[in-house]
Image (cartoon, rainbow, N blue to C red):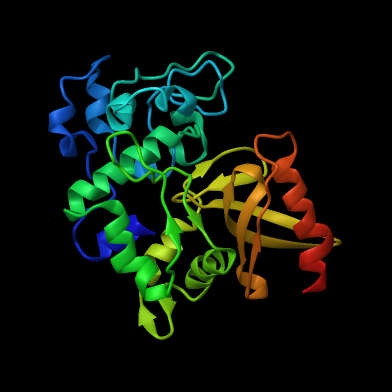
Length: 270
């Protein structure tokens, strides 16, 4: 959402803006590679950069647990090597949408640092002025890196009713109480598929996209998904936003349990 607002305000020049140009002070880089120069804002927002960064793989050099052990989280990401594609992994050029998804918290953390550079404001301040303030969201708790960067990749704490506002903002096409917060074009593009995750799931700009089957009907949704099974799901067909909070952190089946709450109990009642 903040990336879309920065684009709307012409503070961010475009989705094709090159990431490395915003961080000259972090260079020279470890594992230099000319392909790093080509990594864009869109690559970060779709979690499809070529960096070797995978939170779903404990052996990945870019796993977020390794990031938390060092001081500079942005440089951690920029110093990562380019990932390889063994024979059993589909290369980007052979994938739907020409991208290869890899869940990477460090990349989104870097996106937050990039937004601070582009907007000349602290991420929390930019969010407060342009998103949370206009929505009447007052109780916000950010997680911060050791160097004071607000963690754009996770750990944000806000109340359930405020999570509902964020989902409703998108269901409204980017407006709130008659006031434009983010452009309708950004809402549409960020909830459109740009990368394939698996046979059932696609990804927009930090939004998950999935069809939920209820009895003999299928409902398309875009949603936020957090550790523990937390979910903010928007069902445009039903004109409905659902917020589910859960504390099953790092447990097997946490997301599947939330999905079943949607398909077995909540959506059927709609």
